[in-house]
Length: 605
Image 1 (cartoon, rainbow, N blue to C red):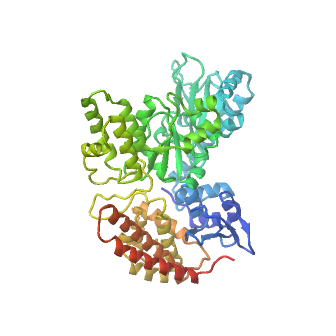
Image 2 (cartoon, rainbow, N blue to C red):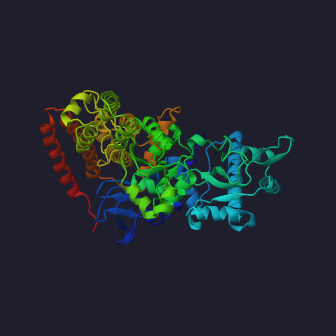
Image 3 (tube, rainbow, N blue to C red):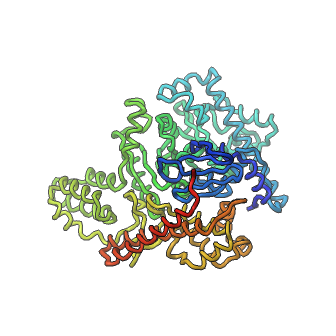
């Protein structure tokens, strides 16, 4: 894959209006020349400690130590990787990106993709205009508005209508210079059955829902039939060069920035469900366009959020989908929660019957997945005799086993014992010991992502919400690159395996510990694209014109040490270890060191 030139990256960075960029997420107040302050978007605070220097294209939070440049800001707030952040900023600030040593074949492939993207965007614009302007679409407009969906929201999602004619898109696109092959590759046309050498539109007489990627580029369409007996109810763009249904999350373009800031995403089934949620003010909602979540979609979600709230239809298919989602999300680091909807309803139904506020309230009162699972087991069980209760307990045992001693577990035991007509003590005996505590990513108990099945606290797939986690790890490594001499000394003194929990940051720390920090990319193996991307992101995060003092670097290292001790204390307490007290004393010493170092670091005035 071609890489963008360093000059392209520099031109994007120079073009960014840092105040405009950050102001899209943070309300900034000017305090002197080249100095703005606001409340940090990376942790909760009431007193602004988030400092932006527009001329330097740099931000730093004096509260959580998060810092970086325009690229890291977009990566952190919108859940994009470095390449995605670079492309997004280039689009936003009108910079044309150039690639390094692009072969003629690669250039041709890139130009082809760009033409296909333009073709799809052109089609989306046509369908949208046809929905709102054509007399033929009057009944479709009435149908959509009758479902309680506002025109403003439908326009935001670029909902459109494909006319009943079989050749509008085909003829119009060919007149605009697009070829038959491009129309087929984009999924907009297909050969006629009786005359294979001629094309017809793939979509006609259907409501059109454009599906876009995180950058807002249309990749394909989902289309709903409006007339019975004319093909399947829903028809998607055929799998091709740009469109892969398993990767698509409907509404991701709009939802991702909001979700990345909130740390959570709401997952619905269909197109109108997502639109209804957004209209109700739930702006971090996406759709899977069916009832089956895929691994590719989970991978996309993990890059943006830590909490996934399932708002699937409250019918048997929707409940089965939630159970499948829990298996698919196991070990992903996602905390699963369930939005309780009235039996047999979906988000759109709820808005129509009870209004937007009711839907918002349902989302706000989502429950951990384990609560949903226990209730479902009990509802489906035959509790009229002893054998039915035994079968229910057998199903409950693996569901409750991963839940550690907590108020949540006590509440589940109490409720379950009442349903089974047993005492709590007897139910605990029948359930048996919980056994080794597993990762709770798939059952949705908040604040627990540590794998404690080994003899000690291990690295986590997703750090607890109270921890800065990978953010602090990434910030420390970037600071080491900003001040290579100080960074080399700091890295030489620490054990990456003890302090780093994120796999990518751990690999980077191991590599940088042995590397020349003044040229960190020089010795990265060419075939290791993942490590190259991580180190490139850290180099970009290090920024230009920044200075890092020894105190700032030490404060960042102490932050990692504080998190390590907190993890070990939690492990010792959960497993009855005798070392928690001594670890607490170490933690107190680290906190005192942080206070002394922090007092020497310049504070905002």
